Length: 523
Image (cartoon, rainbow, N blue to C red):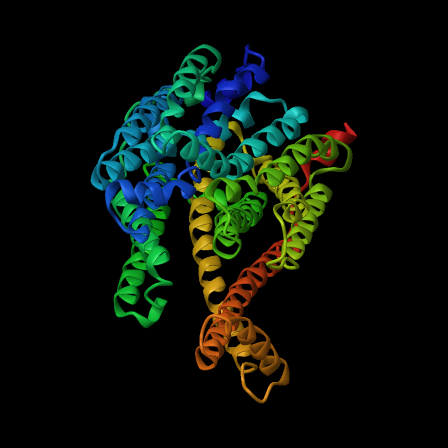
């Protein structure tokens, strides 16, 4: 009762938009480091004398570490106070960034990235909870639009910024740039973030060691399965089956422990928050959107490098129009939510995002960098217009005291969704490419007049350099390489089209959300 009264009486004294500065700076640093390493992996692999597949652990270790820490945010906030934990997270993240840049071996890099993930894991949930607390309900749509801009744009800008820094300086500087911003963020946090009574240090807080153990094993084994599953033919490999079984058993054990300890409040997270209809539906929608966002950010630069021969910088540069779409949509989102309500804007965003997926489904190998600007712009705009309203409405009916726990639960599942989505997209590209290759190779026969004519045309050009038999073999090989390129293209095209399908599946659930903005606008 006392906590409730404190919550009602507490008023934030500092202008919330000033408080947003350190909050958004910390969010941008954390989200940027999810993707900034992507295009620099070949350079780091060379520095550490490792294979490209081994270098992907540089990304994975960060995601796993932050994913494990996210559900513990509420516990550590109660243990040492939320503001103190937020400051500690920024310090750990910044110091770890220095060690990432100084790493001279794969072992040191993995250790530094794990520590960086541990620091980053506390940033996003606390930042989101702070935003929901400091703004009055009528200004929350605009605040969440800014929040969504940082969350979505940072991973999009990561590859282009990482590519530019790597090619013009060297890869360690993609981590060193965090240092000045981390120091600035630390100072601004101490000065401009207030700590309400209900978020301060509490007495007799117990650590849920069993829950933490099963959480760590669940996420670690799941990430290994997702990373290596496609290479190992998924469940065709016995070790994948065993590891997946361990992951699922640990997940069930984790959920059971959290439900059991929910009554005493000693669990890492309180899953009873999922009984809130808005939170459940909003979180489910965001899981799918995060899967689409992170996987598309990974496969588009890969497609441009693999099929069109783009450099790491140019492939990263291709994401800039998506960032522009995010920026424009973040401005529109705050305006449209106030005028139309959250649900109509969410529907508009999902339709726009689906349209972006379909536009990507029309690309071919003859495109220039400018030709993917429009699909990227539409895709980015749709992502913000759908993600921001869903983020807003999912927590709109929760009390301030529930925000930290809710943010931890939501970001945990969003992280898992991003990992699963990226793995599924990689598998879809591989399988669809194989299907289209088998379909097209049936046409490469001498009975096909078009194929025979093409072989004759190409081989005649080679005959000036080699004998006729060799020229024919060279012509057939060239046609087969083109076939493989087209098959790979179809793998990407089909995957982008399925993004549209996945987004459309969210639409019916929007109807069941309770739109609190209508009442506010009426008042």
